[in-house]
Length: 321
Image (cartoon, rainbow, N blue to C red; front, side, top):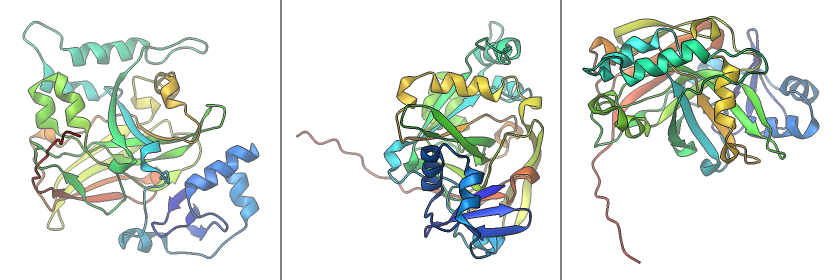
């Protein structure tokens, strides 16, 4: 089962080829809140709501009418975060940016720690991963909408990932709603200058969707990341995800995020990205304004597409009160 959110309000549920409006709900956030308060599942709440009108989901996506699969009504209570160096193919790309002259880079050390302790046995606590903050819901971009690179950025590159969506219940319990495709847009040139610039490089928009898979994450995910210029593919590469291709379990990544009480505040929405192993930047590719990033994986329904745009420069003046 897949869920999508209409920008104009409304929830779409797709099962197989049939996509229908879910009656009685204006957002997937409200749908999730209803499920939590009823002590039920999303599927059960949707079933009890009945079958609404049939819609053409692909046409809605192509016309830019779909939003991120879940969005908090108050952007300040929607947190975008993620983890890196979590995939078995991720170390080489990052290590090439951060190798030192003494020996093993910090990136490779972190990757090795994940291989050795990222998949703990039941009852054990695994090693914590690299973690980063991307911002609030202000930085959450809908499918088909531009990913805007700030004027001061040195680069704007894609990162094809899987993201998990979590609603925090009244007692502080995180409830996982589902998973979607994500483009964790970053500035890899800034990151390459110095690893301590990683935090700066991640403060960029990210896009999610168009569909959210409800249920467990598939253990093996095969997808394709590509860049289109003038409608033609100028770069393309497959990517793998799912725990079969990761050095951490999803449960371990979730634990090390939600172990902080800050991230268990009732009503908050968290979108957490689980890392990538494929970067066009690692292949020497530089995206240009107007290029379209496309992230596709059959297990997640419709592809995620976003054009690249560049922001105009602006003066930032701090005024004394």
